[in-house]
Length: 158
Image (cartoon, rainbow, N blue to C red; front, side):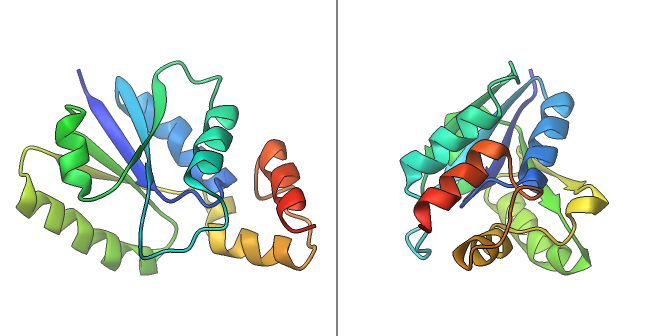
């Protein structure tokens, strides 16, 4: 059984993330969306809020689960018996960083492979940071995030 992990902060989840999640769920038998609790970042949304929003927007996908983790991704993957890490690429600029991570993960655990999925071109500019910046100043994020996320962001910035 191919178990994959798609890791990220998801602060908040965007249509770009959702695109990768849906496509990754077709590549593996079971996909764990790993929500990173990163002590170096100061997210807008709590870990619980990020998990809840992800569960809401992926409830139609039967072969995925949403779980939090901290520490090394390869250790989380090992705990979950995952053999594939899925990473999304928006542009060439993402590739250098993602390649370094993939190589470091390969060094740490050669039994886990990394697969890169190029994001749909319509989402190539999209990041959680861009969404938060637009929402912070009252801009419309409806085309960038699922409706439940857009509504939630409006309550956060009111």
